[in-house]
Amino acid sequence: METQVKKKNKVIPIIIAVFLVVGGIFGVREYMYYSKHVDTDDAQIDGDISPVVSRVGGYVDSLFFEENQEVKEGQLLVKLDDRDYQIKVEQALAAQRGASANIGVSQSQISATAASSTTAKANIEAARVRVWKATKDYQRYANLVKDGSIPRQQFEQAQAEKESAEAAYKAAQDQYKAALEQVGTTRSQLAVTNTGVDQRKADVDFARLQLSYATIKAPATGIVSKKNIQKGQLVQPGQTLFSIVDNDNLYITANFKETQLEKLKSGEKVDVKVDAFPDEKIEGEVYNFSPATGAKFSLLPPDNATGNYVKVVQRIPVKIKLKASKELMQKLRPGMSVKVSVLTND
Image 1 (tube, rainbow, N blue to C red):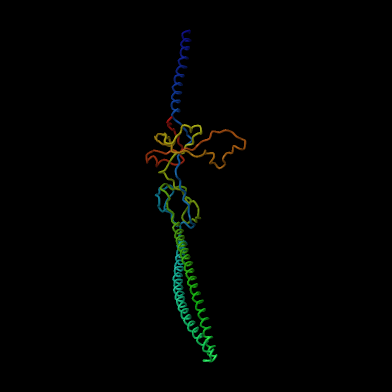
Image 2: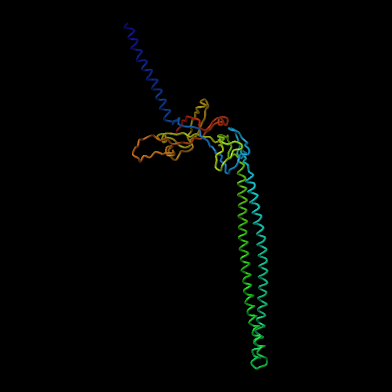
């Protein structure tokens, strides 16, 4: 009996020693690991999701894709009924042709008024010669009427001819001035007409642009998702039709505690474990850090100025680039949960 008690007394210290050794080894390993690693499971896969929005309204004429189908950038996906927009293009072209025809009319008017101004200038010269002749005759008759060589009636006739020539000369000058002003006015009208042509050309370009929006193409290469339209449906400008997920540009958004950021730096190696593929080895690299905490970007950010302040450890989103095979990248999807472990350089 005494022997059994002694054996029990020896077993208990041995068990305790074993637990202490195992616990010590585990503690040392954990200390060594966490001294070189920063972990978080508050992380998920993210990617570029491009919403495709209709720029014009109309009825859906044709669909060239299916839900969850892979598409290429620039691939035709949707065609709206574009007959209304084609008619608007024709109307804009007709207006442009009309404005261009007005240019020819204005140019003809400029030529006509320029010819009139030339004629008016010639009339000035003729009137000036007539004034010169009438003035000479008047001076001559004025000397003759003094000595009675001619009757006064003939002198008065010469005087009237002189005044008439001077009036005609002034009228010719006014006509020439008016003709020049008419040329300037017509040229101004031509400038306005040219502006109208430019406006009509802009209208044609806008109508063609609106027509081009009736064919909707893929803005990026990826997988179509969240399809919200059917053939024959009326869509409105600004309506989201579907989204395209770019699987070639996936990354990880890891939300680290603010107390973990001290050791994190851009370029550090990251071990990634995806919950959906736990046996796949994926590597990554710390790329950059968010300029604010996640709480600051929330719909109702906390306001500590209210006085009801409770200190809560905040989290900072960190972007991590993925380094994996193309086959594995094709399996990953934005939103998948992951666990990341950053190998720090400290």
